[in-house]
Image 1 (tube, rainbow, N blue to C red):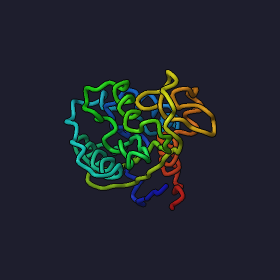
Image 2 (cartoon, rainbow, N blue to C red):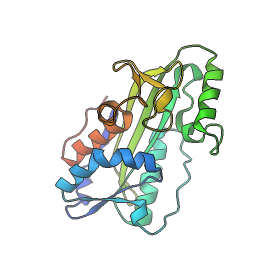
Image 3 (cartoon, rainbow, N blue to C red):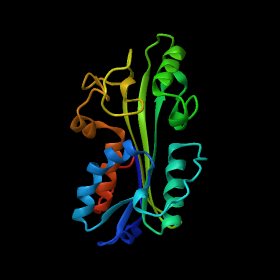
Length: 216
């Protein structure tokens, strides 16, 4: 995990708003309980894109999770005038040379179902077991200035077959050995304790409280 801290974080002042810039309702559902209480205690209101006039969604042209998180945070903060947190995340499979990576949400095209995506992943793996991970890069920006960023991951395996009905996206095919479950089989509290996104937002919470996450 790596993280960076800019001392000018005090632009997020008590009584202000922090925009969580995602158009993905499932992500927002996971993010709210990870950060909303902390923001409220700091006198900061969580704002979403649904609370604002329509904002053009930036094109994700980055070659890495870092780059896409940065460009989204900077773009939305410039468009709205609000300090903004944005993240980019994906599913990386070792035997597929790190795919799906930054293309996870668009694998096989934006109209493909996750059942179709799972089937294609299993076809390419051809029965071979593979290590895999979920990765999240998170960035906070105000205007054109990047204030904070971190990247976190959860390591596991591609499950032998899809299992579970919780979560979303690739959760049914990501097996987490320490719990012996896919992330789609985990209760919400268990997933919040171990997931890549939860780890990134814990780093953000520490930053908001004035502490810097460990660097590596």
